[in-house]
Image 1 (cartoon, rainbow, N blue to C red):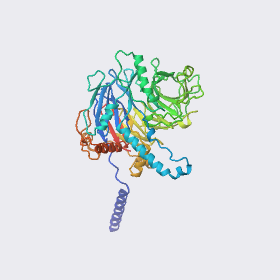
Image 2 (image 1 turned 120 degrees about the horizontal axis):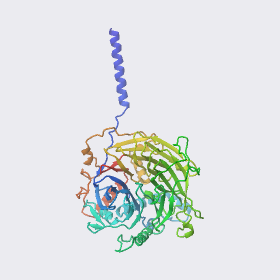
Image 3 (image 1 turned 90 degrees about the vertical axis):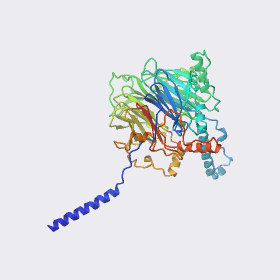
Image 4 (image 1 turned 135 degrees about the horizontal axis):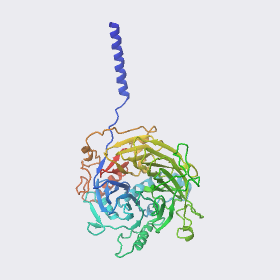
Amino acid sequence: MSDTSRTTTDHNSRTGKTSSASSQQQPALPPPPVPSFIFRGHDAPIHSLEFFASNTFLATGDETGWICVWDIWKRRPVCKWHAHKTGSVLALKAIPIRRDDSSTRSKPTTSNGAKISTAQSDSRSSSTRKRAKAEMEAQQDPRVYIVSHGRDNEIHFWDINSVLQESVRRPSSVGIVNLSDSGKGSQTVVPILSLPVNALNFCKMAILPIDSDEPPASLATSTTAAGTTETTAMRIGAGVLRRTHRHIYIAVPSPTTSSLIDVYDVTKPERTFAAVGPVDTTSSAKYQGSSDAIPSGSDKKWGSAMSIKLFLSGATNGEQGIAPATDEGTLNMLVGYEDGSVTLFRDSTVASTAGNLATTNTTNTAMKSKRTMETLWSTKYHREPVLAVDVSSKAGFAISCGSDNVLVKYDLSSSLQGTPEVVKSALKANGMADGKIRSDEKAIALAGWDGRIRLFSSKTLKPLAVLKYHREGLYCLGFSEIKEQHEQQLKENKTPSLLASSNESVFAASDTTTGTRDSIVTGENDDRDGGDDVNESSDESGSDSDSCSGDDSELEDALADRQRWSKRHWIAVGGKEQRISLWDIY
């Protein structure tokens, strides 16, 4: 009896020790992530958003056609205007305007190769300082075109740079600027250029700007004389855009057939490619797929084009998708269709400079007649409409997602001449409204109809996180741009990141977020140096704790702080709840 008691006691003792050791070996899981900020400035669901100006501003568009621009550093709206009066804002794009950086270009101090080699470290540090200076100047004087695509069948180019510059130069918060095209607002704004398009099938525009190799000229005024015809106004606007960009390609569904795509170059302005569409699978071998692809019969119907992405192959895209003029690349177009198919098209222009967009003379009439696109491949891994496609910054791979529960990754590096290599990931929920690849090509994010943000490893499609805050459906998503020098600084500071680990451990939010919904909205996790807790950001004017008297030194401190903020890895999402959540997770 006593032996049995001792045995039981010893067993329990050993079990307790084992449990204690086990609990020590397994650290407690971190609390589920919550948004850093919540922006409220719209009275309708959010359908589009875009980071720009080195991640210091965010543009958002809603279902009733209003656009709001936010200063992320201030957590305040900068300006707001009714861009599309009879329809929602389907898409937003910010096109950076290059500066004349000839004065800051690094030049060799000697023609002697040996001397240059010995001064390599000094050259690198000098180059780093110049990049930092150029970035700070870009933040102090942001220059972009805001491009909006609405359900009113119009694409507008906007110039609001004076408002942005005023926000940067005044660190203290100021009231929101209400822009109007009728003179009733605090300032007047009209489009630089307007392009009539087809927006009946909810397909968002795709846009690819190509930088000019000439120093940018001063921006012309955005106003147009009264009585100017639509054609004349378009030519005037194209002239303004031509001063800063060699090409600005825009792809939208054709107004006659929604399965066909038209590609415009608005700097001309002209329609460069007309009625680009899929081939008939019964008469062509271009429709390809592996054994696990969904079969397509001879009576295949593609349906409407639902998502488009323009990119260059053989060239590296620069800041926020803008291609330098010195790059030589071939124009490609990835399209997702209503039936679940994804098709890759390529510029098949027959010329001695075929595919070289930086040197092709599009003013030559004979050349124009030969601007055509060929189908490289078409495959189908979705059973429902493809709502979003995206291509990595180096055009090495692409993704697609849609109304079903499948995320598909396509290897473009090996697929230009044949069937693409594909990796699929089955999701636990249907309905992914938007999908994006981060600019460093390490992460993929999906915005779901269930209000969840799903993050994946770009390399393996392994789930990294599920972010939960929104209770209703999400419609749009965006990453801030990740720059190489920012990543190097994060490594030097040993900033933790899930993506920095080789095993890419999963960090998923639990089913219930900690704290109340109000505690998230009131900005209790605001960690800006010297900043106080603020209420949710709205379109009402107010004052911040970071106000300054306008002294140059205080402005420099504010710019330096703004630059630090631009290096954070933001994820922004918007949807039915009329609010935008900003996350800083990785």
